[in-house]
Length: 420
Ligand code: ATP
Ligand code: MG
Image 1 (spheres, rainbow, N blue to C red):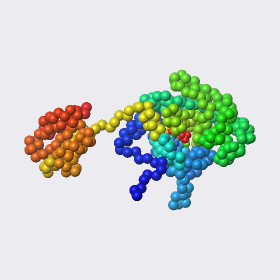
Image 2 (cartoon, helix red, strand yellow):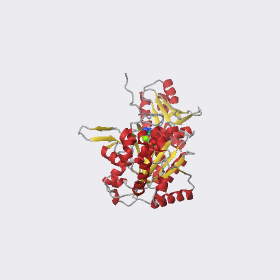
Image 3 (spheres, rainbow, N blue to C red):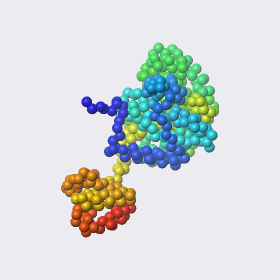
Image 4 (cartoon, protein in one colour):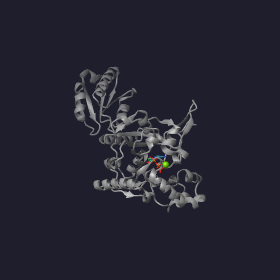
């Protein structure tokens, strides 16, 4: 029996890779336009980083993480997201002494032990950005506009931007008391995880995916109605700026986000098309995280975007991604002399940035022509003894079927001109 890929993982095949390359390049270029620099972080970290940096009362850490002991007996986890690793790196490399803010972006795979469905995998890809060292509402707006522009650049329409504020530790303390008072009489109906959360972090109950817990929290007091003046003022400034730019949003008091470390602004971009996997992107402010992970007090805000869901949404909206260019030329040869010349020609063409495929199978002329057609080469040149002797050959334009007599010395110039 051949071995299959593990459940929840997917190969990105050569015929699809252009779609990935396209969105990756767009995202990287856009981030650079906003002054963000790329960072690459490890696939695995010490488990403790995610317990602290994602939060040990979250679904991700409690239920979804790939955790194992390595051969040295250390507890290691595959990254379930990127923010914790970026923040660890920020602290480890003393980035707080760089000019602030520090603006970083990444393109990573992430790993979660999930119920696999369309748009929900165990290995998946995220694009993300983190803006560290800026507490002003302008930073929240920069992150949101970067995303809005990304979707606009890709031609994606109708993603809903949902916004909320989940306050700061100060107002959350007060709110937790209110929430506990509301939930106290309903504990028995909650799932076991939430019974534990009731004592440790009742806010997490608002994000539980169990139906019973969902129905219990439906009428719970909203955090947004209970935030302190500073958080309210911050939120108002964010929405005022979005209004000024003309970015449309909904206020959704139900968003708490899946990570423990969020403060103040939280947001999601949601599609109506992908169903329950409709959240294409989520993010928010995390002013306590750097300190939580052992660094100096540093505000931060960022997001992570699911690339599989992004591509799914583009497909649903009928957005065509430009296909890769066909090979410029296929060079075939019959006979030893011609083969040597074709080697030299292919070498020269490739040096001039021309995509050249040459025969490496020793096929017959007929088979070579068939192959050139299959790979969609724009031009075909077949060399034989005659061509070598006269230094002339027939260049066939496969798109029109026309054939031109050319001298071999002019081939490179001709192809360069055609490409221009
Ligand atoms: P969900 O509520 O759908 O489980 P989440 O809140 O767990 O999402 P985040 O931790 O905010 O997701 O991750 C950011 C983004 O990464 C999501 O909005 C989504 O697009 C994508 N994502 C998260 N989990 C998966 C997964 N298992 N497979 C594919 N994409 C995912
Ligand atoms: Mg999730």
